[in-house]
Structures are given as structure tokens and as C-alpha cells.
Amino acid sequence: MEYVPHHVWTGNTVSLACKRRYRGQLVQRKVVIDFDRLGIARGGLLDACLTDAPVPINSSNANVFQRALKGVAPVADLNRILSTPPELLSPWELEHLLTGFEDEIEKWAKRTRATVSNQARSLFRTCKYLLADGTRVSDFVFTTRFTAPTRIGTLPLAEDFIDVFSTKELAEPLSAINAETKTGLDRKAVKHLQMRLDRVLTICDSVIDRYEKLRETLRLVEQTPPPVALSKIQLRNLQRGSYPTYRQRRKLDADTRLWIAVYIAKRDDLSHSYPSRYFNLQGIPILQSLENRKNEKGAFEALLCRTYAPRCVLLAFLIIIQASLIWNTDTAISLSKNRIRVYRNRIEVWGLKHKTAKKQNGIVRKPPIEQESDGEEIGWNEINEQRAIRAIKLLLEHDRAVTSHGVRENDSIFSGLRLKQMNPLSFQVPHLARNLRGFIKSHSLPAFTLDDIRTHAANIFFLERGRDIHALSVVMGHANLAITEQYLNTTLVRLLNAANMKRYMDILAPTIVFVCRGRSAVEALKLDATRIDDNLLFPVSSMADEDGDSLADQWIASNGELKLKIGANEIQHCALQIIFYRENLRGLVADNISRFKAFHLPRLVFCVALYTFIKASRYAFILEQCEEVLNAP
Image (cartoon, rainbow, N blue to C red; front, side):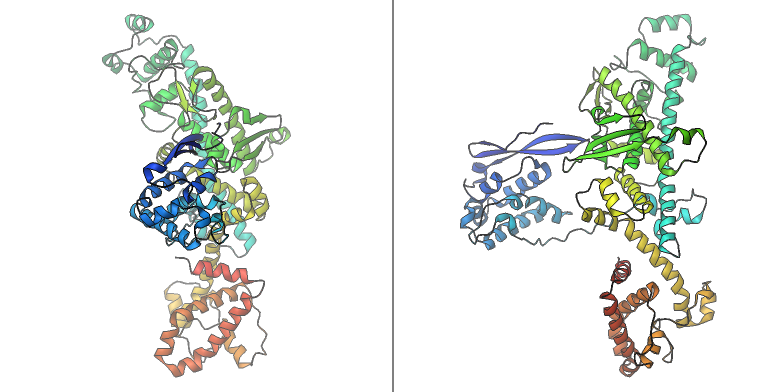
């Protein structure tokens, strides 16, 4: 859409050109700031910030700024700062103003105060005017007093226990899988993620299959002569434009009701306009088959599915395309007929990133014809591309019908029938979050969002290509690698680190119990006694005997002459031991100072020295991963 190229000033009032995205469409909004009503003079800091404000502004930022401004304007000191030219203000006055903004935000923002504060300060970060000391307003560093919420990414489809899978390892969460090597862990993780995502995509396939079968059924019903169950009088009344009464419908079977519904849809041209009166579609099971639940509006959509794709089918198309292209939801929704090019061996598409409005390209390749004809086994990725090709072709067919028969609010190929009584029929992108909740409930799936599909597919892509972060960054359309790295660290890497730590703890647990309570306790707890390691780097706990012979004791006894081989297990054990000493140092000293000096102090010094050595080595990343998992809440 076209945006106003500037903010509109009318006297002492400015109308800020803003943008927001609603159901995949960029919508223009205006936020008005009246200097006279606020009691703030023109030519001051506020005027400078609005002059340098970008066009358009994110509507959320503008709304928060306007609300905070109304709260601070009545405060005399803050009003003076906003009315004073920037070149006459010192940095501490700007800090005082922003602190006043946070005081106001604290009154009405309850949960996301750090985010709201960041939004309220957005216009100050774009102001290029200079302060009294020569510092730009945009360069001023303000530290918020609000604590940013901890955001830990999740993979709902990968972390739930799902008992529909044949093996326990696939049924358990991703963080519980077990592998001896990094390569083995990645291979198992890929299979785990593929199976979980494939479960959702298979359901989408079944929805589309039922959709195509229903279209064919309705076509055949339309060609079928009137059922014998209809009397001549009832048939004549239908031909004259009447509807069957409730009493008449009760006596008819489901097939006859379906024939009547198809006949009325053709008679009244319902693909162009809503029926003139209430049209009862109850008691026709085939029209409820798409959503697996009774839904009057869904039944009406199903009746028209020869022309338009119902909302549940559009959702299935969207999930499949997101999984194939690894696009976020808004970028996928921005797809239109003009952004799709169909070739013999591929389909090229491009969409718009919703935050930056930048172009993002994607290609869906068709499998070679000889591969299909020879019966060669097709891989998981090829199956997904076949699904995407099928979805795009059906979407284009749906889009042509929408363009020919109805009025559309935007050019997205995901525009669905607006289920309100309007003539002619109107189309808009449906409320996807609400539709997804119904989809999840009707198919007994764990709760997830559409962006979780993208995350899931991105993680599979990353692991299949040997953890190639550069390739993933290109596919996801990220501006730099830092965004992609943060994306992975909050989900996949954290879960695989947890899986790796679980493997290590499974190995270490029998040894810990053995050192603390003996072999009988290991057998009583049904732990694997073959995993007991008598040659640990450190004694496991303070309950170990003083004459224990750990690797640390051997190194100390040799005055540092003993050569130690430090691997991943020893690094993990060192991280555990550091945490043990941090948490229990006071207690160890207070319990018995003599024992501490003779027993713990030499090992403590050795532990700290080894920790410092590893921290400065090229294997520090292993230590950091261990600490991240161990210190996680």
C-alpha cells in the first residue's frame, strides 16, 4: 500500500503516519499529537523528535509514546524539558525526562514494562539534534530500571511427550534423546524433528485429500437426478425458489439433504452471494468432514468448496508452505498471484518481510520425472516439496475464483470467504490463530503456533546441512548471522545441550551414588553398575573418603608431574565441581576447618586452576555450554 511520505502538520498539531500489520496486510494508521492540548511549546525537544521521526512509524511505538506523553506533560519540570530546544539541554536533563516516562509507564504497564519503555523511547533514538555538550539525542545511553522478561524459546512439537510414536525415544522430548557422539546426536535429532513435523504435515495432507474428495463428490451430486425420496410437490417448490421446511427436512436422509443443498447452491448462485434467508445445513455429515466437528459456517464453506477453499484448508496450505519455504507467517501470507512464477521443474515465489518490508525469495523444486517413474524412494525434503507444489497450485485455483466472483480486501492468495451476510461475497485473510486452535483441538495435537512450524523446519534444515548457519541465515532471510545464531541458541542448541548433559548425567549418576553410598545403593536404585568410574577427575562429594584416589589427588601427589588427558567429560565434571564449591564452600569451612585445609583446599586450588586453564583454551565453548545448562532455571 502507499504511505503518506511525511507526517502532516496542521498548526500546532501533528498527525503521525503509522503502519501496522493486520491479517497479513499493512494498514495505515494516524496518531495525533496536539501541542496546545499538552501544553508543550513548539521548537523544543518534542518538536525536534517529531521532526526527525521516521515515516512511517510503527503504530505500537507511536501509541505508547502518545500515552506516556499525556502522562508526563502535566509535570512542570518535564514539560519544561520537552519545550526547551535540545541544544540548551544537558544529558542529565534528558535522563530525568526519560525517567519520568518510566514513572508514567509504571502506572499502567503491568507485565511488559521493559518492552513498553523501549517503545516509548523509540522517537528519542532517531532524533539527530545535538545536546548542550555536543552529544546527539540518539546517541544518549539510557538504562531502563525495568527487568526485561527472560525469553526461552520452545519447540512445542519437539518437547511434548507424544505416545503415538512406536518407539520410546521418539515419544520422549528432544532434550531426552541419547547419543554417544555429536554426529549421532544430530542424526537422531533430525529424525526426531522430522517425525514430529511430519505428523502435522500428514494431517494437513489428509485435510487437503478430504477437500479434493468433497469437491468431486459435490460435482457428482450436481449431475445426479433428483432423489426418489423427494415428492413431486417438494421438487416443484424447490424449482420455484422455496426452501424445505424443518419438518420436511427431518423426514429426509442425509444424501437427499445433500442433493437439496447442492441444488439450492446452484439455483441461487451462492458462489456469488449469500442466500436470501436462513439456509439449514444440519444433518449432512459430509459437509462436516473437513473440520471433524459440527460447524454451521464451516458447512456453508464446505458446500462452496468447488469454488473456494474453506478456512481449514487454507490453514493446511499455509502450514505446508511455511514448512517448505521456512518463512514466517506474515511473509507467507503476503504471497499473491503476481509473486508466483510456475516453471516446468520449479515454482519461484517471493514475499515481503513484515518488519523490514524487504523481499524474500523462495524456490520449490519439482522431483525429477524419472525418479517418480522408476519407483525410487523419495526423501523427506522431496515429499515436503511435493506437498508445497500441490498446495500452491490449489491456492492459485482458489485465488482465480476469488478474483472472479467476490470482493477482496487484499491480494493475498490466502484470502478466505468472510462469513458474514454480505452481497456480493467478501474475502479477507482469516483469523489464523483462532483457526489454528480449532485445527489443533480437532486433531488432538499439542498446542503450537504457526511460527513454531517455521522454527521446526529451520532446525531440521540446520542439522541436515551439518550445522551450516550461513545457509540457514539465507533461507530465513535474516540480515546478519547474529540474528540466526540467537534464533538457534534460544531453541535447538539449548535443547541439544540439555540432551548432551542428560547423557553425561546418566553416565555419572552410578559413580556419584557409588562414591557416596557404595555399590549396594547403586544396585538398589537400579542404576547401571558397569558405568561406575573409579578414576574420576574429582571426588564426587564431601562424603567421599579422605584417602580417595581421584585424578586430582594423583596430580597433586605427583607435584604436577602427572600428565592428564582432559576431554569433554572432564570439562563437564570441572564445571560441576566449581558449582559444588561455590554453593558449599562456607559449609565445608564451618563443618571442620582442619578437614577443609587437608582434604578440600588442595582440590579447590586444582579445580580453580583447571577451570581457568580451560576457560582460556579453544575448548572454552564446551565449558560455557555446560555452565549454561547447569545454571538454567
